[in-house]
Amino acid sequence: FFHNFKSEEIVVKKWDKQKETFSDEVASDEEAVTFELRLNLKNIDSTLGPYPFENYRSWYALTDFINGQTVERLNPLKGKISAQAELVSMETCLMENEELNATVGCSNSVDREHPVRTRFVDQQGLPIMKIRDGYEIRFLAIPQLN
Image (cartoon, rainbow, N blue to C red; front, side):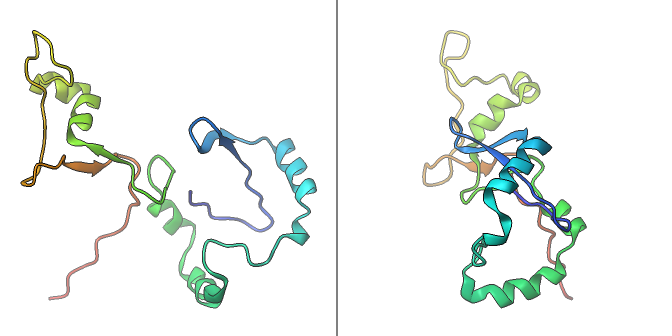
């Protein structure tokens, strides 16, 4: 997740063991204070960071180019980022979009009403995958120089 920290701000996220991801539930201020006291922030290892310590100076210098607006613009609509993109097949996209599904009239299950299962494959016969809506990082397009 992206977060633009303000001075002395602490963010406490709850871990969902079932889903193996952060919960959407926000920790209360009381839980955050308890966490802060337990952790004793002054003793946190200074090498903690989302980058190798040997690159610290470069990363630190680059942070001057990021502000709250940049963080908000890049943040996926669902607010979650993972090392592996949240990919879904075109069939799944179609099945999850009830309005489009009703228009096209396809089904993910085979029965008398739907004797053929809809499949989208590329030239090699592999399923066509796309990033699930709302989970993509929202980069800007790089303008073309003419």
